[in-house]
Image 1 (cartoon, rainbow, N blue to C red):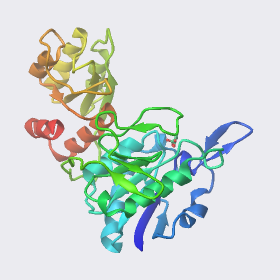
Image 2: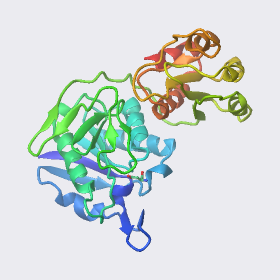
Image 3: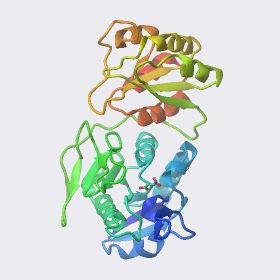
Length: 323
Ligand code: ASP
């Protein structure tokens, strides 16, 4: 019999839909609290609820708090695995942050739902049961933090929410799911490369996330300097290019010691300094822009915040962000 820690944090999986208003929200009591225990008899589930909020209300401070709970509970009580229920909107950010920072050698698995608990076809209970079954698996160890959704198992690094309403809202565009849940098995397909952990006990850095677009200029970049941001991540065009009018702002930020990191606004592929025209990747690299591969903008932002809590040294930042 396995001993699992189940951490409810909120999200649609913990909501009920009001049929009169056709809207869902957080009620006074999480409906999962009544049912979680009844989902399985193959594990003992210890259920806690540090948050009961929609995931757009999650902050990096909440993520640090979750990380501390997981580490403390696992070291004091020796759990075999951790399951976290979470709203889907920011689930990938929390999963990625935990993957980057949590030191625990048991499976940590996040899940949620696209339909509220009282809706027809509510997916929360089956997703939660699948997450529990995954956390019980020996093979789920050493694969990093996992996200289980709609019978697929994803790594925190690769997973992203790709649909606003579908029950199959989560995908791993670059690598595909790392595993699959069948009615009687939890099957893994490959062993993912693991992230290097960062030591983070608090986050007090402000990192902006911008999306590049045709005709973008420097105005927002210059405003970020005036607002004393600590770093900027830009979802750049294609392989990592920006419109020429942005380079003045980028130069100003980098000269002021504010790191600028680019990822791509494309869902697939990698960034690479391939073009030397003004604003092309090669020009940006000459200006001191850091290229971050394999992460989308929201995860690169989390990583840059965590990296900035560890170092101010530019070369060290490059080493962390480029690996
Ligand atoms: N807006 C909800 C949330 O992220 C969506 C969900 O959980 O599916 O909390």
